[in-house]
Length: 184
Ligand SMILES: Nc1ncnc2c1ncn2[C@@H]1O[C@H](COP(=O)(O)OP(=O)(O)O)[C@@H](O)[C@H]1O
Ligand SMILES: [Mg+2]
Image (cartoon, rainbow, N blue to C red; front, side, top):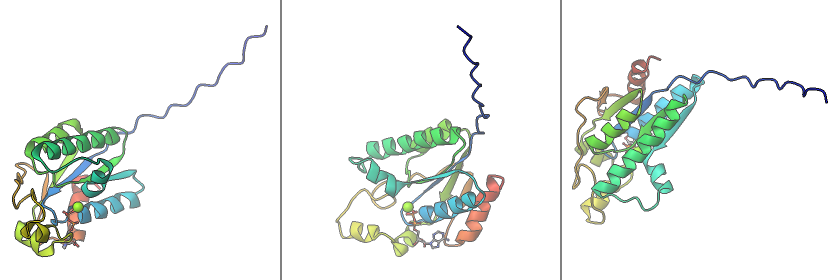
């Protein structure tokens, strides 16, 4: 019996460098999703692999997740975990979540090699004036409860990498600041 033909080794490309996780936190209506989409578009235009994890869309995928402190905390931690997995494989991750608790954000931070916390600090009065989802109006009518900043806590970040108040900073300028922060 002749020896079997040698099998060509499968070429192995080097593992991609860990990508940053850009994490937008702030009240509902602050501008997180708007800025996240703009940053993601800029990253994609550079040809980078990008995943957007937006709170509203993710909640639809995790039915049964409510707005109690325990549910919110677990939700943010789970998203942080997924973000860290993607980032480890070189995917740039843009997360927009109210993520009201410091401890849950801290958990996400310690999982990620490069964590860029962007506090979208637009205050409640302005968020309520915009009210893009009618959330505050419903809360004021007593139809919903546990709205962060209204009748539920929002813990302001202590040491965010960036703070952006969208009353004063337009989308283009904010995006530019974030891109500069990640070195692009
Ligand atoms: N400079 C700005 N940056 C981001 N959003 C802004 C800005 N100025 C006004 N807006 C508006 O504020 C609203 C923010 O909504 P959204 O991005 O869904 O907030 P969030 O995801 O934080 O709940 C949008 O209607 C957006 O057009
Ligand atoms: Mg949003």
